[in-house]
Length: 85
Image (cartoon, rainbow, N blue to C red; front, side):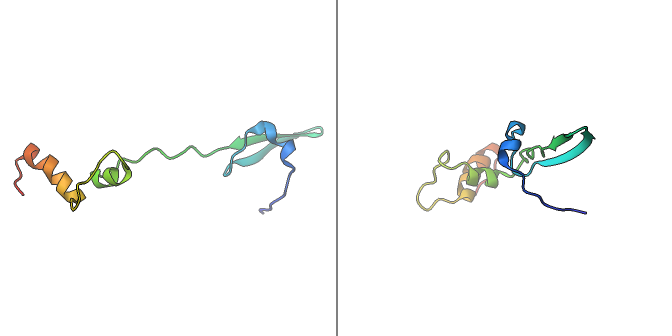
C-alpha cells in the first residue's frame, strides 16, 4: 500500500531533503521514529559522441558562417587519418 501524507517542513529541516529523496521508517522507539533517507546518486556522465560534445560545448567551438559540424569534424580528422574530402 502506498499513501502520501503532508508533514510540516520545520519538522524535517535537519534532514537536508531534496526532491526525489525517500524516507523509510526503520523502527519505532518509544515516541520516536527512526528513519532512513535514501537519495539516488546522480547518474555518471555518459561518454557521448563527438557530435553531442560539439553541440553541448556552447561558446567553445565557433563555426564560420555556412560551416557545419561535419565540416569541422572532417577538417580535424581528415589530416589526422589521411582522409581527403
